[in-house]
Length: 74
Ligand SMILES: Cc1ncc(COP(=O)(O)O)c(C=O)c1O
Image (cartoon, rainbow, N blue to C red):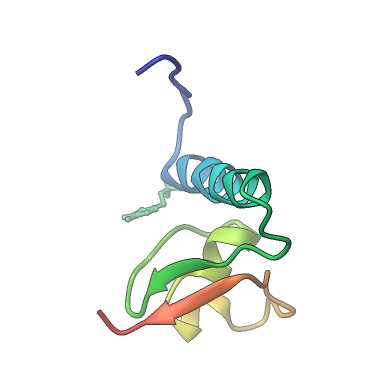
């Protein structure tokens, strides 16, 4: 590992992971990269991480959600 990202919360770590995944997708020439997320998973309470979360209760009231997530049951 050449670089480390220190952060102080799970959602900050997941936000960074989402940004890195999107940046990597763009570097690969993908205009609209999608990230696969799991139903029933919890990813945090920031706007991007609650959009990735597979639980409507966490998302309710904060629409429109961040797009670019593809849901999988497993
Ligand atoms: C899997 C997972 N991702 C993200 C989070 C969000 O972490 P934080 O509350 O530190 O932002 C949690 C917190 O329970 C978690 O369990």
